[in-house]
Length: 406
Image (tube, rainbow, N blue to C red; front, side, top):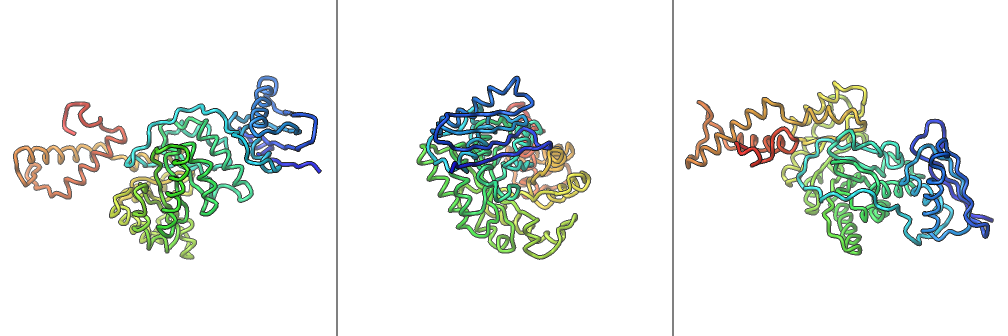
């Protein structure tokens, strides 16, 4: 009996994807049938993409049926490979597409992380143009947004996207599954040099260390020492209680974030718009992150249609000490950026405080005054941090470029 496998999606509501069905045969060569609305222009290209994967995996005799809805080459390669794997083709050969994006310099540990746009890991249509919305980061999600039966296919798609999709200036993040499945995700994506790995449902520091050790093992085998940062996600009462230890588990941790849907479910309460039920947990996370010297990143705001509610939540979030939050839709990105970016009035006041502090330092004075008001050291520190955020968000030139006061 011939071995069969299928992967991908088809239907009137599907775009930028394809459905691939394969049947391994004993003879007959590579028989490929392509159905596509753009077959006249791209039929040969689609077929060539399939043949490239077949040859890479050593599949000489196979019948392949492809129903295309505008898939790009990285998606074609991922779907064909997934179908072949499901048909029983062993992990021999390298079926990854040629790298078409240049890997950027390593992501700075303290870079701006106001917005993180979630992209479902098995939906190529959301990946292609994500960088155009200018989020600070994109999250290629292999966990909650992917059906359990599609984890293997999503893993290949995300791997290929990291090689092929230009996300612009966005930091490239991947949310893996819970361990031990997450180890398979790491094996697939770490060779593609993502900037950061999100660790879901983190409750103890050992989980963070296990992920970090696996990353280092994969990198060592590949002769690569590019830094890959970690962001544990706190999603339970137990995780909240261990937040500081989790943040200090390894120097690779750059931020803590919280998942409020799972956290409120763990408490057995309803998540509300004002967030009173999670105030303790969010405050605890901010305090733990600050004590550990890492960033505190808030959860997502789930109601895409309520921009006023999102803006209010983001402002409160910043007021609590968070430095950013997640996005579930591109339209949320600029609303979040506006909330987490210092205003003109804040910047002007902070610059005045910093200038007064530098003048006092130059004169050897221990007391900083601004007009008739004395400025305490904590106020100076807060102003310096605000100026730094304004620089990273492009509201002020980098230090030294304008020759003026920082």
